[in-house]
Structures are given as structure tokens and as C-alpha cells.
Image (tube, rainbow, N blue to C red; front, side):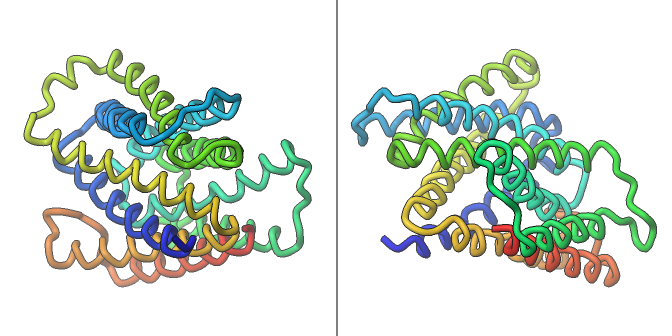
Length: 288
């Protein structure tokens, strides 16, 4: 199957997952740690089922796969915390600064040198992040939400570096299997912290949480397969288009079903988001 099909599926999956996660945090779960505990355990359950479809090989590549799972779900905690307090159309674009951290980590770990184009990409990305963080025409106030998103972006970048290394040594399905154990470690950590809150989760909501966990496993598989079959640059160039689709769908849903998502629909705010998202998208493309 072509890498392009895999990355298009990844765009669809991350868009749908982002909308579900915002809905869960707005209506079903108030504490982000509870959602992380449920989501990471669901990821483990679905990924563990892969044992029936793969030939496991014990190599050092399972270590970065497990660490990648840990980094991914701790990143999700900081992301969920920010998502519970801010518009999803603002949160998702800021996470794109992950690309800058990938470049920085690659420089220190692999001695990769930045080009002029990459410097321009970093500037465009940072400018877009600055604009989308503004309140109207006032200078942005970088509070907890912003710093949590930067931390989440850094952890997602660490996961990306670890995952890319692992997929060079093992198949995407093997990678998912071992990543699930990293997710299980995070699930245990947050379940211990929020045991009493987990007992209050309604059973009828677990089906929705489980469905999103299943989509998360599919997302990691399609994205890993796209990276394995195609180039990193082209894969992430197409993948980054999801920020436009999230912005578009959230705006439409906010107009026709404001009870689902309460996004600011002021025309100047929409223009501000559109400009910032465009700069972030262009910056992401330039640094890849």
C-alpha cells in the first residue's frame, strides 16, 4: 500500500481523535489524568492483541518503543490539561512546535546542521505560535496552558525520535505492541493517583473511550507505516494538514451545534487563527 494512503488515513484519524478528545474533556471527564489513565490502558489492551499477528523478536529496539509509549502518554496529559481550558483550534496548532524540538534533538543526538530554509521555518512556526496565543490585538500572556503545550510538544518530539529509531529495527506492528507496555506504565501511574475518580466514570462512556483508544492504535500504525514506506518530509507535510481540518470542522460544529464545542466565532478571532495556522503550517513544511 502506498505511503500516501497511510498518511491520508493518519490525517483523518488524528482529526477525528482530536474532536472526540475535546468533547470528552468538555462533557464527560473533567480531570485530564482520568482520561489519560483510561486512554493509555485502552491503548495497551488493543496493542496487546497484536501478539496473535506478529512474530516477536527481543531486540534493543523494544526499549525506545516502550519509552516512546511513556513519552507519548505523559505528553497527552499536558495536552489534555491545555485542551480542557482552551479552544481546540488554538491548542492543536501550537503543538506543531514539536517540529522545532525534533530539529534540536536531531542536532544534539545526530549532529544534524540547520539550513537557512529550516531557520526560516522555525521563525514562521514561532511567529504563528505567537499570533495564535494573542488575545485579540493584545500581546499574549504565556500562562500554564502555553507552557504545558510546549512541554507536550517536547515530549511528542522525544516520542518521534524514539519511534523513528524503533521502526528502523522492528515492524510497525511490533513497535505498537511494545509501545503498549509504555502506555500501561503511564496508565498505572495515573490510575494510582486518581483511583477514586476512575470509579465514578460512567460505564456507558467507556465504549466511547475504548473506541478512541482503538483509533489511537490505528493512527500510530498508519503513521509508522507511512514513515517506513515514504520520506519523513513528505509524510509530515501531508500530516500537518490536519490542523486545517480541525480548525474547519470545529468552526462548523460551533456554528451548528454550539453545545458540542464552544469556540470563539468572532470574525477577527477566526482571521487571527487562520493567519496563525497558515504560518505554522508553512513553518512545519520548511523545517522538515
